[in-house]
Length: 499
Ligand code: SF4
Image 1 (cartoon, rainbow, N blue to C red):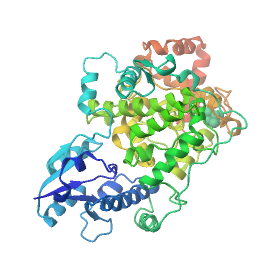
Image 2: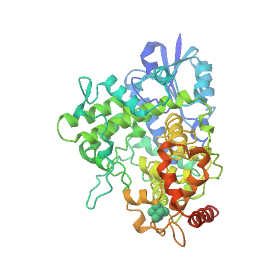
Image 3: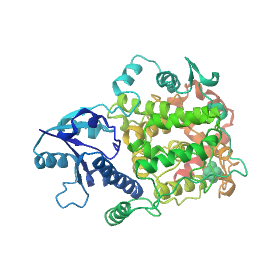
Image 4: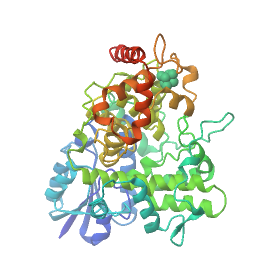
């Protein structure tokens, strides 16, 4: 009896649930590069190259452990170019009568997996889908902070008995420093592509050349060993300052003190607990401050697990939610970066070059602009899924639909993350070199974020006006005299007409 174990591109872990569930002698691991996943939607070139290269290296690592691996390359002439087609072909090739897979991170694939055979829970996450659904059941508000505290207790991370280390659960208030002069941002490790990666880069150039994004230089980690080097480097060189400056943005400094480990964690080359334990160990050793370690661990055991839970309880229609009725098409500068708004141009440039931008660039620049301008959430969501190497539906959809665009009406966030130019000016150096004047609300050269911010509040008053967390903002709007309100709205309309 042969059992086929399909391993998906984001399941590159040697302790995947399906590998623990069967006898190695009976199993054939199936890995397949298919156009059905890489080509639709048209993912960033670097994202495809990263995943194909990591998959090929992972297949080698599995073989070294004694697994039989059936690897179907993209240009295999027999490749059906769909995962379902490859499972069927593998069953026939190996005369297999059983398929055991681990649940994928999107509704579309999970439905397909059920037709293949058994689907196991993905125990690389710290809580199961069922556990999260139980936690959410009957709650009036699904507060991340409540979930996070529970996760601290469950994992024991940064706990002294049943109390949080340092007497505080959350040091977020300490973690909002603007960029300081004279800071040096250590670059993360760069890896010379080996023959396997070079072959993948040539393949991506040939087959996905019209996709968004730069492919070279390509210096990403693509193996477990390289991923561990990245983790150690982050803890050693950037974690100490991550907390203080995690919300700061500096032109030309794409990584700053961020870990940039998300793509490695989300594809399985690093585990969530091991990265948290590495950070906690640095705190225990006294080499990094508590606010940095707590802020980092909160991203992993808090936000990461929480958004995944939200994705599954929200259901397959979550991506189509649009409670604010935003309908504007995605402006072309999300692809080209050609805009005089320096903050947007910088965030798109970083995205194009690296298939990565840090969370404040994503949330407070790219998503914030889309929120204020009333861009169709489905288009924004599709863009985020395409352009980031760490993006899969389970993580991208809640972050964009819920957190970034408030299109779910507040399932995730208690208020929209809307901000005018003042926020971006406070947290970055972008405005100093911008063609627009961040201090101006209206008139020639006024920063578009300013009029769009007020216009967003005014045009969504029916929906948002009673939100107690926005009352102060609506008070601000009401203090403008009607003539100024009319000028602001005309300014916003004039700008939107240029998109
Ligand atoms: Fe962005 Fe406005 Fe600042 Fe220009 S002035 S960088 S558009 S926030």
